[in-house]
Length: 267
Image (spheres, rainbow, N blue to C red):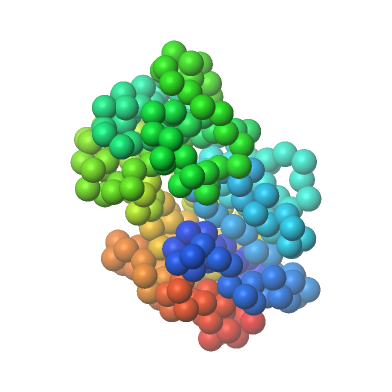
């Protein structure tokens, strides 16, 4: 029996976007076609909310957004997030100190309205800027520890080998360290997860988890993929993500999401 799907949820990088960070050519038409049939589309990303809203605003599409790995959720047409879960920046002090001692690393404190980017590596700022639309620079820890933030994201061009070994040992029962992309390690309070924000989004729309189909590729997607019986890993996803998914879609470089939605008859 075909599931009664009412919400499509997609990660961005490595999932919806191709290798050049482009949207699938048929994406706007797909979102509009599903909306006409009462099926919503939500973007669920580790990116900044302002970055995501700026990226999609010119398309004029009815999209909901989960941002900052689930620390924020915003519904289409709203003036402000309906879900927000912030943590004092001082909670992340050991992580920030370790990042500042890692050659080539750029720590970013991700607030609800803007991000604070460390200024030591100007050559990294263009790469960081792909994910953050509202930023300010910082240099000394004392300048930022008073803020409340969604997470700390640390950029390094070789995150897995140069950064993750330094940050992974700082994980605690309350502090989660996530390899969230080839150049990024995210650190958040353990209660923060895309799945928690997705649950809030489902409740807002009066939907059940089995009415959502969720696509992802990296470890920060595992929680929301496991939340629904319709979790889908991309063919390019990490093995740990595929192990938790009910199905595998073609890779992000081959229009995988739209191809999967067509294959199951939703498009």
